[in-house]
Amino acid sequence: MTVNYKPQGVCVRNIQFELSDDVVSNLVFEGGCDGNLKALVKLLDEKPADEIISLFKGQTCGKKPTSCMDQLAIALEEARKEKQ
Image (tube, rainbow, N blue to C red; front, side, top):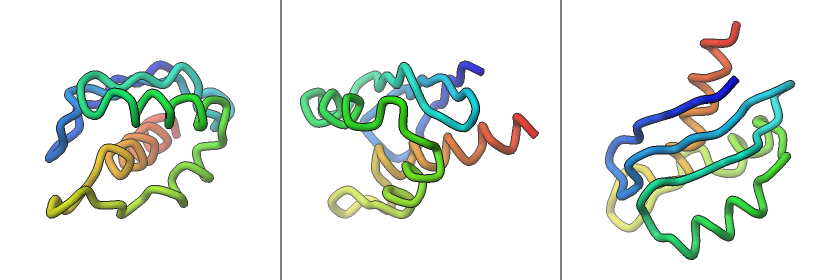
């Protein structure tokens, strides 16, 4: 399943990924801190959703109550609910 998620409270405008057998692939962030997000995409490719959620759920950015990676964790949780 391909997911497009509109994050809230962060610089990233869109998060897109594929979720198949609870594994994340083809992750793309639109906007945000380009270099950091490109590096994270490489590290997270073909990782289980559970692992990504446990690593990044609740992560903040500066004074913001969320972060791009927290938003990814939220997107993964929502995609899993939708899939059920």
